[in-house]
Image 1 (cartoon, rainbow, N blue to C red):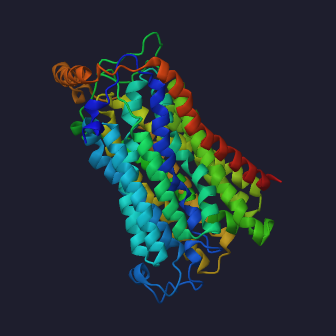
Image 2: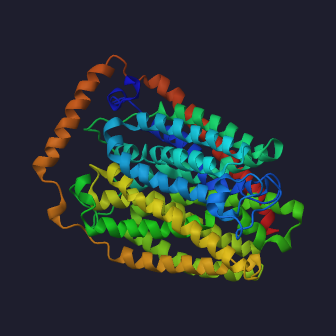
Length: 522
């Protein structure tokens, strides 16, 4: 276990910091497949809603019955709970283990995430095989969700510390892969489902993701306590919103700013995640008149892939832009522009302006991804960087709440309206409008975010004590790694290889998304 500890992965002065982002991307591209889970839902083909061929009656069977039933297919709201449970446990595990990760290091967290996420998908495959919904919830939802949380936060504070000159870019790189995971995983999952079966798709992907995440975990290195970027100018606006001191993780939640930012993240995520959770079936129902039965499934998959592409682009674009715009203004743009777009989406869908409907959702997803990538830098600005990883972990409980709120709004409103005879294509309109109102509330909360009162910051003596302890540990550990200095010649070889390993799947995913998605615009 010693090779997993933080003490063993402290880098020396010759280590190239650009080797760390590919390691983070391997993990995040794997766990990001949670965004593509709607590819498993559809009632046509081998989807989870059509394993038996006879849908359960919501009136004669309770949710408890459907957890164990093998004689009929589940409802959409049943299987979407898998996604919600996973997001809930992502947020809870990030909050619980965030402070531990700061001490244990990202490698140990990454290895744990690989076992939990890969193992959770394998358990879900068994649940699909035996038609046991409870096992799918437990495997992909609970076990996999804990893996998501550990994998998600493992690189965030590490990359912020490696890239103090560009906090927004660092956090964008740290979680860019989480937005792009579905872009790569969705077409692969669709191929496996159509070629083999749904349970085999879960099994194969669980095994592959385990391997990829283990490789990523062993690529993590952390900077020494006194790390500085030589000769690089820091890109940040000197404003009152950027704290020059640091708040301890045990005190951050006692400030009203923490809870305002909690609400800001929860509302932004609820709006975007509501779309993602039902993306494929929603598009199939709205666009059914424009495509044949044989085309609609593949084109809907292209829509999901385009959403994932927008998610990944938004994480880099908006997070990097926030280095210049400021975090508060960036979120103000998300909420104001997002409100307009959410009100516009139902109009475009109901009038069968399919291309416009798709474009609206693509812009929405850039801001959804951008919100995730910007929030760690927002926290670093408000609370300082000393405990930003742990504070970020606790704030992700907002994601857990959003994982229930967003999908519930989309699925339950849809089922309620369709049960009263409303056409499926129109049933999402009310849901979109409610999501828009959530963004209005988010704009108000963001407006009231102000700089912290100086009384909340750690004193100079407290901060010095913490830094001295960290510096001593890094100094002691430097003796352990001094015999194995980073070989710059080897790094020059490994660096392009590492980026090719993560870059080629991303390029393939982008190409595939554009190839499938472009049909929508004809």
